[in-house]
Structure formats: C-alpha cells, structure tokens
Image 1: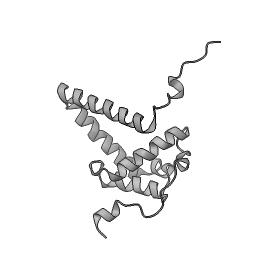
Image 2: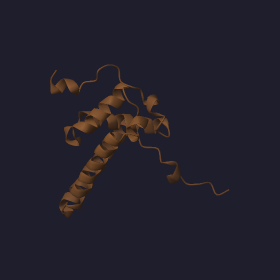
Image 3: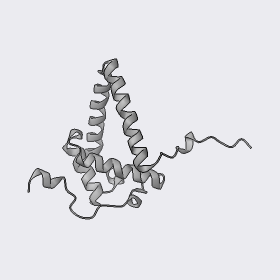
Image 4: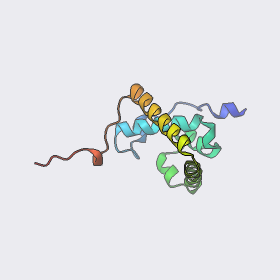
Length: 128
C-alpha cells in the first residue's frame, strides 16, 4: 500500500452530528468537519496531524480522544508553534499578503457554506 492510499478514507466518513460532542452547535460541527477534511489532505500540516484527522473522519477515534491524547496534543502544539514563529518573522508585505489571502478564503467559504453565525459572546444582548 502506497502513501497515496493512506490519504483515502478506509470506509464511510463520520457525519457532522458525530462531532457535536465537542462542538457547541451544528454549524460549528460542520466547520470542524471541513477543517478535518482539509487537514487530512494537506501535506504541510505534517503526517501526525494528517493521521489524526483521518482517524477522526473514519470514526476510529473521537475528537474527545484527540484532546485527551498527549500524542496528538503535542503534534498540535508543535504545529501551532511553527505557525507562530512563521507569523512573527513575516515582513509587513508578507503579513498584508497573508491577511488578503485570509479574507479571500473567508469569502470563498461564506460563498460555499454561507456566513458564519456569530458566537454567543459576539451577539448583542437585549437590554430590556
């Protein structure tokens, strides 16, 4: 079995609803599901995180297992550290280009999936 075979799901993929144990609502579960698919197929995140995403998507492990796993939390922490270092070393021009790409990705996501619902803490409160 080759490396490309490892990137393909071994069977049916979990549904958004199966992520509700760690998501606050169905929209957040759907966003997490999309993120896991992206991680599973993105070589730049590293093999450990790709494997974690494939394991969750296949249902072999749950997201609760991931957050309780030293192995996966260590891989997530290492990747976040790499991202932070890269962000801190960006020139102002690179940072502007990165922000522009982020806006474009958000717009594409909203065009495909609709706008994000504001988090509860972002919603205005009734003052009645």
